[in-house]
Each structure stands twice: as structure tokens, then as C-alpha cells.
Amino acid sequence: MTVQRVPYHIAIVMDGNGRWANKRFLPRIAGHKVGVDALKRCAKACDARGVRVLTVFAFSSENWKRPSDEVSGLMDLFAIALAREVPQLNADGVQLRFIGERQGLSTRVLKGIQQAEAVTALNTRLVLNVCFNYGGRWDIVQAAAKLAAQGILPTEQHLSQAMALAHVPDPDLVIRTGGELRISNFLLWQSAYSEFVFVDTLWPDFDDAALAAAIASYAGRERRFGKTSDQLQLVNTPTRVG
Ligand code: FPP
Image (cartoon, rainbow, N blue to C red; front, side):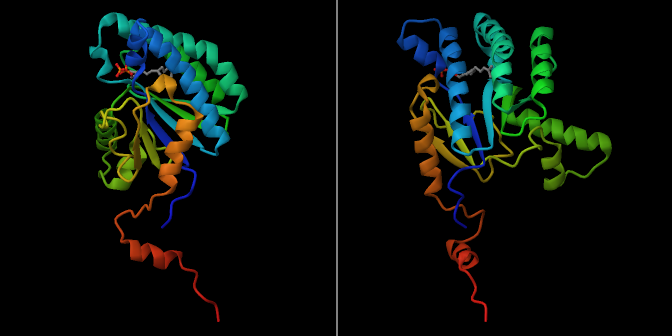
């Protein structure tokens, strides 16, 4: 099976904001602020290239362990960015979804999330899933708990349907910026057959050219989903009629 040239769903670990700021002798939060601009640019670039779903890791279940000023700075930035950016995202046809544990978030952030989701609910151009207070293990556990509460057997299909990203197909391509070669508790269940691209580029510097390079790498790969290459060639060979 050859891959579609453009991935339907791209997921990104937006890493490197802190180092981007450090290199400029700026506070880490300055890197996160520029990170928001990079996210807006990336959403536009994804849309222009025909990607239909973009999922980003904005705040992990583990990020609470960061220094308290960085955590509160990120929460402020998140609330401010939502209030400021939602009208334009809405005008651009972006449907915003927030994926993660809502308990423990401030009323201000919760209100921003609820409003953003309500305002953009009917948009269909690009789904932007923002993973916030999210962890892949949290998602698997909450899905299993949901099934248990309903007395449903945890099959693969049932679990997939109970996961927080059940409204979109699994990511075709997962990109991690910032040079680290790990998954860091992102989309553990959903990335089972994703293609991965790791780049050294720090997230604030991730631009359309970097996105194009990641998509080109993806497009050159053969996705086998457990099958052999020969089996896939057979499926793709047109059968003669008559
Ligand atoms: C990782 O870089 C980045 C984060 C933990 C936060 C990412 C958040 C944004 C880009 C803002 C998102 C905002 C909205 C409104 C969705 P890091 O701090 O780990 O960088 P480092 O590895 O260089 O220290």
C-alpha cells in the first residue's frame, strides 16, 4: 500500500520553546509566546497543503512539575491566546477541540476552552486538536474506566471509540521538533501505525519549509500495517477485466 502523498492527520510534539528563548537570553515564556505564533503558522500551512486534522501537544500531564512561574505563565498564555486567536481561527474554518483532563484547570482556562469549542464546533476546514493537560496513559485509563462503568468489554474497537481522539482517524504522521527522540506520553494508543519524523528545528522556527520536508519524508515511505511489501504490491496492481 503506497501512502497518500499528503497525510490526512498530522500530530506534533512542539518541543524547543525553552531552548529557543535561552539562546536569546529571554525568559522561557518568551519562547512559548513565539510558539503560539508558530502554531498559527503551522495550522495555516497544514490547511494550505490539504492536511485535514492537526493535533498538537500543548501541555502534558507531567508539565505541572515545571517551575511554578512557568506553569502559571503557560496557563496565562493559553487563556490569552484563546481569547485573542479564536475569532481568526473561526473565520479560517478551524474547528478547535481540547483533549485532556479538565479537572484541575482554572475557571478562566476552562471558560476559554468551552467558548472556543462552542464557537468553532461547526467548522470543517481543519480540525485542530489541542492536547492540554493530556497524557497518552491518561487517555487509555480514562477510556478503560468509561467502558468499565458501562460494563463494556475492552476490545480494541471499543477502546478506540472511548478514547479522547475518537472523533478523528489515527495520525498518519507524528512530528517531534527540538531534537529529542522520544514520544513523551503523546498519543500512545493512536500512533501505533503512524510514521515518525524527528527534526532538530526548535518549535518556534518550524515553518512551511520544515512542514513540507516532513510531508515529503512521509510521502516516500511504504506503510505496511503488518503486511509484506509483496502483498501490498498485489493489492495495488490493477486486475485485468476480460
Ligand atoms: C515544549 O517546549 C513546549 C511546551 C511545553 C508548550 C508548548 C505550548 C505552546 C507552543 C503554546 C500553545 C498555546 C496554545 C494556545 C495552544 P519546552 O518548553 O520543553 O522547550 P525546551 O525543550 O527547549 O525546554
